[in-house]
Amino acid sequence: MAVTVEHDKRRKKILEKALAVFIDDGFEDATFQKIADRCGITRTILYLYFKNKKEIFTYSIKQLLLNVEESINVIRCDKSLTSIEKITRILLDIFRHLEENSQLLSVVLDYLVLLSKNDADPEKPVRRRTVKLRHILSSIVIEGIKAGEIRKVNVKTADDYLYSFIEAAIFQLVVLRRTELNELKETVVFAVKLLS
Image (cartoon, rainbow, N blue to C red; front, side, top):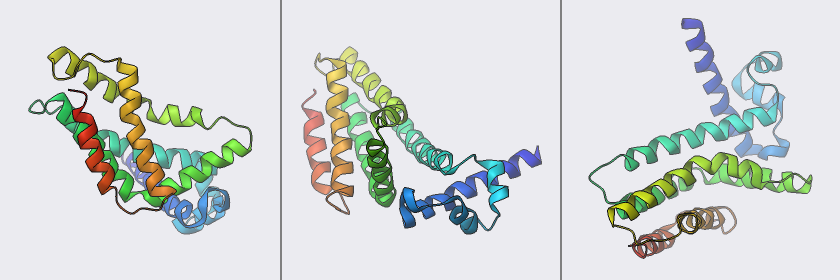
């Protein structure tokens, strides 16, 4: 049991340090050797944990998204909140995570542009990584409609509407290089109320 725990702990440390390499050097310039050096291990040992740089990057993003999902599930399960309050708090919580990880978002955007240049479909990995979030938002919209807190709307359209605020936040942080999303937060509070 202790070996598995140590293995998992080391894997997590590698992911944390690899994220720093990706942030410092970007996806394209980050190398297996740079990641191994940052971790204080050899490339051979790094290969015991991960097949390649892309796998490390994917797991790093997955770990970040798991933290976001845990955070928003707490809000989702809070029975004292209305559906409108849950959606608002979830979006604002996601914005907080995005603000805290704006450098990583830059690396992710670079990676998606690289995929696009290599004739790969960048939408596929984005969809795969955001499907749970979209499901959570949709389920809250459905709950809200059933409870009479949200007017009858097309759930997919409402989900796209809400998700577009997340995309706008990423655009503002990465492309416009804003450090905070205060104006967008106010817009979200206003816009979510329009669903009631």
